Image (cartoon, rainbow, N blue to C red; front, top):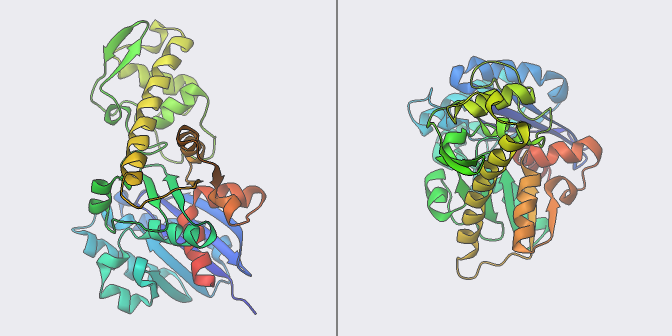
Length: 336
């Protein structure tokens, strides 16, 4: 009898959980886990995941949370997260180490840097098995992975930021001020305050393109998540109040900010594809920004498929498997 396998992608902002039964993804969930507030946030997220992980005998684990600023170093972060997971989970833990595959927690503790931020390799490895010569674009809340799945180059975040495979911009949490320093407003260029007034979640709420269930963190000012409240935050970055311009005028400015972000991802894609011998016949989109990644595929004139569709997930599981691709991928890899 096939054992239920839980895939865990432990991030600094979210815990992503996927349950695999009989080599099929049957449930996926993303749980807010602001780890910068302390390791107790991981405890709380695991408790919230309780109904989904109940009865599972195997946990396939990958992570990026070691980068969180509460840890002295990445190595220290990996070791402390592994220790906490061993305390909180009952069952067999299989730690993903990228090109080295899975290992037990004790062995992983002896090589923490191979564990660190290897989640993109899980997704790329599974995609490479299912669709040769595919380019993966996984746009999460904070970062975007761009991987030629047959031959990924960088193995660490530092290396991947050099190769174009990691663009530090995300669908919701990225501050507007890190995307652009100016934007058009009512026919003129307007300099932007280099402060954290608004996020890309605000931009997308203004444009009406943000799903209600993907932005799970508090806003920059601690207020609500209506379009009007997002517009108030966005306008502050222009040194203005929202009432000073019509919504349609602000939306043009927001469209420009969104386009600047997409261009930065497109630049990363072109850098990856410029490597001699790299071929891409299609794009696999993933993350909460999968729709934005599909727009990049259109610009490249390449066919696109979501990660959820690629693995044969259905209904809500297809949407959330796409949004939480590394969690689903690491569980499926462990199942095989």
